[in-house]
Image (cartoon, rainbow, N blue to C red; front, side):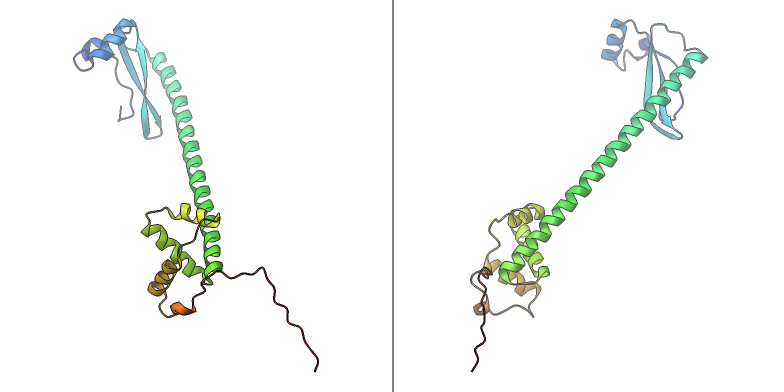
Length: 192
């Protein structure tokens, strides 16, 4: 069938040694021969339509034409379904990638704000923490964005020292607590 041409009728008796259970089951249903028609679109063969017959004679020309028409319609349906499944898969993968990217960007922002660092440094911290702890980056990012504990100060310092040694602050200059932006300091001007 890989040639894409219809195969001659085969009597099940010829296949008893090769496919004994199949030949027995077909015989129990009064089928004595099979004719295979290719499921193809142009040169692409995707399978075969098997016509089971209760007579050992070959199919007539008209029966082969009708059978091939059914095979052609089945081919179109199968390929359309495959195409739709592929499109759905690509859409799902793209949506997942977009959702992951959004979580990663949010987590970078949280880490950068809390540790007063640049976004690229926050990404390095996030990536290193995921690798060192065998975590999926998207899962870690989602957790951080949703309020889970951030990588520790030591993890942050280590990542910064390795990836950006020229901008790494001395440990004693590092903020111990995240900045508190809830208070606003107001300066008043006095005349004097």
